[in-house]
Length: 466
Image (cartoon, rainbow, N blue to C red; front, side, top):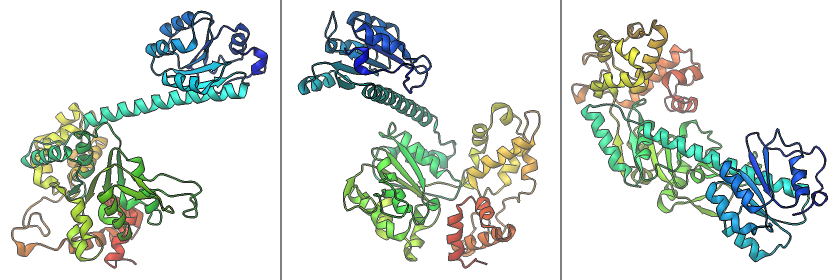
């Protein structure tokens, strides 16, 4: 190994690493080892010293080493010989092999044995710092990735579609069937019925469950940047593109991509999405090069895409490609039998036990226009208003109108003659919401549980601008 003067280690120099990290130096050059030992590294990482291969292996068996700086020529063994033994103690250890006899073939063999890096003597402090820093960073990134994968698996295991009603059971059965396929799935249903949850449920039961799951709401993406967000962009493709960037499709490659509110996707981008579904190829904005992506596509909408096709705002060919498999989620009104299970799921045991039969009767009489999402919000507010572990549900529902079939706009209508067109109902509802909030768009959008951009688009559609 190089001596202390070879590496030019200045007095008091430090390495920029976090505490709790362990570096093992296996080298018979005691001057070099002393230089590392006394380089004021105590607050950066712990340095362990071994002057022989056997003593180095003994230290590896006693302490998990993050990085090992290993000399090739040792008194008792060749450094390359002990690489497999070091990795058998901890396969995440990053080995940096140093040699005074650099050779390309030897370097290739070392990497094949599992070494992370290869340094040729003599080297200076900058080279050494860079190599060690790169090794620690790589080890940390691998650890972060492992933790992330573990969390994702744990979260996937916790995803449930709650309910024992016939409607809920049918949805679960459909989800299990579609999970086995890689075909696109279109999830439809009213706002708050659980389309995002069902998309995660399908992914967690699919062969891709250990891969990435990305969820994107198309309605909240900025219209002038949506193409770059989805497909990526090359440097200089637009004003703020100061560097090349990967899009959502590239980031989701190998896993599942869930596109919520697909009906809001601009018409000119629908052709690009169709192309991805057909051949799995994308082009970044500003690039002529095609890139291959392997993504399973799940989409959702609470609007009528057939109507959108007739109005010329949604491509018919894209609709049929997205709806190879289609699951329509029922409203909470259609699965009231699940109210007790849903309450138990959203509340802790003490809170759930405090619900009375009168509470359940009040919930059964309510129309739940916001569906399961509204139920969750109502329960949260009831808990905040309650005292002593009990919840005050009646106070939250005391202004709720009972759901009866004689009420105007009640669901379901008793005959086809009574059905009000969905577009008319939506226009009326948005108009009332705007008036209630004095045409404050942000407050109105929050109350309707939609994005501000979606509200503005619908205001233009229905001529509701003031």
